Length: 363
Image: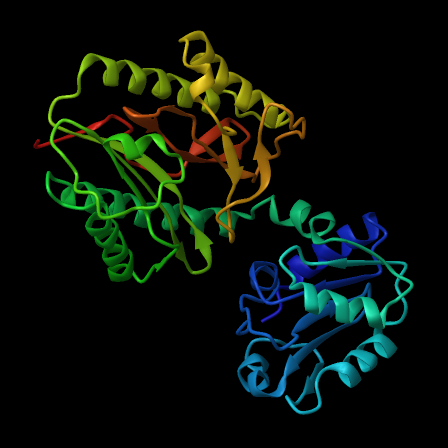
């Protein structure tokens, strides 16, 4: 049902941004507000909010299920009729809008229908309203994300238990999916399992390459528990790691620690990236750290804020984001270590309970 406290914060943000109407399609923004998101297909579906009113526009075939979750006035339409008349009713009810804010994941055809009905409105990104609200997690959200992180810790252990010479990356990824399923966690896409040189590709798609003795194994995984995401990256080695690998692992470990140490309310997010990046730069591996230090996480796996050296937004208590520096040596191996961190009055608190040391496995 409608989270009234979240609705109040969203309407406050609408006033701050001079937004007259907010339109949200099925997806994570709707889940944030309702604890539910309807089936998404080609049929237009919107939650439309003004400063004082709101309607839920939904196709008839999904209305029955939606009524159990949405305590707002409904506007429905049939497949034969289409949504034109119901959109007119929504416009008549909510009125004109100088600025109409639409969810960032709205389909283009859904957006065009709104633009036809509100032709004089200035349309702006949903990030103007939703991101500032969703970035600050409540105590209940933080507790749920800690529980979600615990399920990911179990999945990492399962991944490394399945990792041995001759086993393919996809078999290891399947062990992750099975472990999440056993915990009633929705798996958030296939885990990244990169063996040997594949670990040097930050977004490697797990494939049929067998793991081999004497190589690194990178595992990056996440799941969704009761709507909230986990995300974690850890490293293993099949056999005893050589000195070069240990050097890189140690540099990345120091970079993670430096990034977490820089987490402080009031400090800029850029400080986290700069602290982690300086460690890697000073060790001579700067050009092999090819991405930002972190991303926000909550209902969506990647959401604001972005942890880059250019983001001067101040950290606030309740923000949750990743700290995940990496060094990627193409043709050899890559090392990435990822922690999810919540900003507290005392600094950064990580959600995972797993150690970051490389896991030594039989080679």
